[in-house]
Image 1 (cartoon, rainbow, N blue to C red):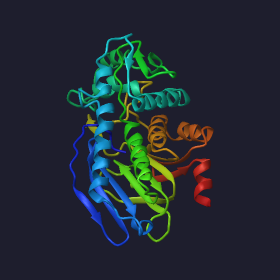
Image 2: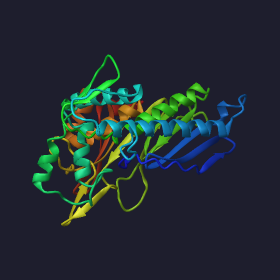
Image 3: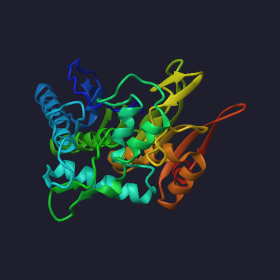
Image 4: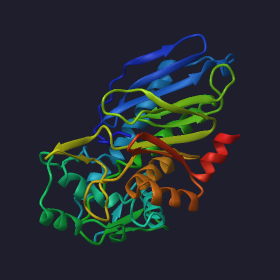
Length: 336
């Protein structure tokens, strides 16, 4: 999973349609999106291509205006600039994402934490970043003082939130998944039920692919040298998210520093796990869990996956190459 920058660059590259499917593609959240609809299920329904494209674009713009840290006018950016201790009213969608984030932070022991923004910026991977480079231990220590999900108050009974210290919220590990879920709801509301929605690698597969088969989704080989499929999984009414440290990083002093920051230490992850793929009913949950497990590493990550009954595939580096490990639930899923 590439780092979500949430810089909105909506560039319509067209609608492609053939005998069995039609596809919308474009750019959003600093990455690309793709919507593929199985036409075999739409023989009696005329497809209003431009109207659907416009609805997709409008929804992506709306989400970006709520959750982008690159848009200084977004609701999230306004909250990040808000004074400590002041209540702040947010849209129901942003409230849902923050509420979900807090639950996952608790369940992961802080491995997933959307308040990590100060550290992301410090290491050069965020919108307020300086040049990428290894910061001093003192700088890391100071930034960590403004990190901690426990200092974010998300009121369950209303749409008010506030921070108890100078937090900087970064939703790059959950917002793309939320956007995938929203586009999936939009398509179903329009009467489409056989489709695949993907944003920057996070996706949801609904119904059946052309040929009345499950959607076959590839998992990328974790390599910075090129793009290739490592393995694939059949998906039907299922979300999938992949997190990896093999594309977004910098090197200094011969060492590679990942964009994935451990909120508990203030430093980039540094272990043998190179890729995590999570299957879930919600792309938002799959997205966030993939980041949490990436932070924890293979052993602790799979323990968490088994406790939470998550379908997870991890790829680790060994002395002889790459090795694949599966959680109990994924092993059962792929065996059927």
